[in-house]
Amino acid sequence: MFKENFDINLDFFKNKSPPLIGVDISSSAVKMVELSILDKGNQLYRIERYTIEPMPANAMSEGGIVHLEAVSECLQRGWKRMGTRQKNAALALPVTDVITKKIIVPAGQHEDDLVFQVENEASQYIPFSLDEVDLDFQIVKPVSGNPEQVEVLIVASRKEKVEDRVAIALSAGLKALVMDVESYAAQAAFELTLGQLPESGKDQVIALIDIGATVMKINVFCNGESIYTRDQPFGGNQLTQEIGNQFNLSLEEAEAAKRSGNLPDNYKTDVLQPFCETLAVEVMRAIQFFYTSTQYTEINYIFIAGGCAVIPGLNETIASRVQVNTSIVNPFSNMELSSRIISRQLKLDAPSLLIACGLALRSFDPL
Ligand SMILES: Nc1ncnc2c1ncn2[C@@H]1O[C@H](COP(=O)(O)OP(=O)(O)OP(=O)(O)O)[C@@H](O)[C@H]1O
Ligand SMILES: [Mg+2]
Image (cartoon, rainbow, N blue to C red):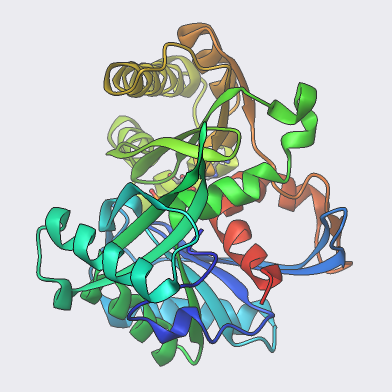
């Protein structure tokens, strides 16, 4: 989102010129994706390059940036390793760093009037002075049953959150041209795969759950419109920690053993299965929370993304616990792969590249 770029304070939203690299700054790594377009009408893309550059310990905390310099160096290393010439980047803020609000306004207003109204509304619900925030908005759709009115989505973030990311990109030699929101980027990438659902998922309530290293990000949407987002602290680091404790390994050793599966026989029963059960309970709680805070009473599909999605048997555990059809997301499933890409490796990495992929798609926004 942030798509129509009626920006108020940020000129880097406006000056976008494709192509862009999608850059996801996350707890365990900086992830970058570069796409090219083969056929716009049929949404046919090719993945040209991607990279996952491990993040140094303590540079991030629960998805938030702690050490700007360490993160910037990580980004620079990743960019060099990716071997691209593109320096324009699309980045995103976590949902916890943005405030969103939908308002209803008369349709067909002049842009200046709309800006005035948005600022006025925003000043009422944003708990800081408007000087301290970056504000953007987008007309979402006409109000159903009342074509005289339109729904407008306002997104605001504290300036420093945006500036940190812009500065990190800049000191890594890149230029941040787009600042998106993680949940919107993830949803855009996921929507490339909607064709796998009957009637492309029309009228279905879909929960996209990204389980990374430290945060579980939930986004529930229907017909392309997000109805609920929530980030909660839970992720694969818990499993790494448990492996370290149980088998007396350092966190680095535990992480490597977890990914290679090179662990004693009792790992599955004593460590992995209990973790999957706990994770499934977390998912169930998150869904209960969704039900109690909205008028919805049913979720039709769960899609899992993030590095934890590839844990063998996890989606089955979630499906049986929550009683909802559950699958793993691969945003590249309909894409052509460049000859540089190893398809088996991409399949493993794909669920954790969802946000970076959605950001890379911003290259193809109408100008
Ligand atoms: N093959 C694997 N088996 C088990 N766990 C894995 C595997 N591959 C990756 N992971 C785990 O997935 C997590 C990383 O996922 P991801 O890349 O989505 O996280 P992140 O985006 O960096 O974190 P966050 O979104 O929380 O900021 C780590 O905990 C890692 O150990
Ligand atoms: Mg992540």
